[in-house]
Image 1: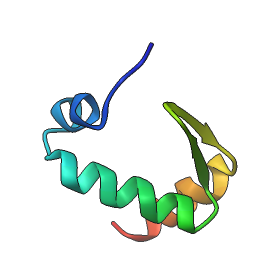
Image 2: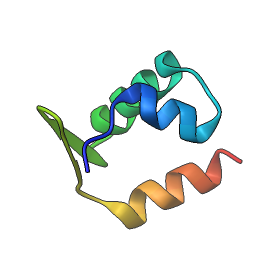
Image 3: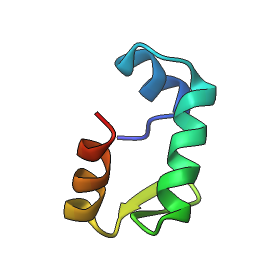
Length: 55
């Protein structure tokens, strides 16, 4: 299933800009890669720990 940043934003109740910014941040930290329209999670456990620490 292909989803756009706008689709993710609508599901999360936020705006596309925040989705884009956070995806870029997660990519810069090495937790995921964006390959065209494909999102590849490289370190799910690490990403989960990082996001849990932000709460």
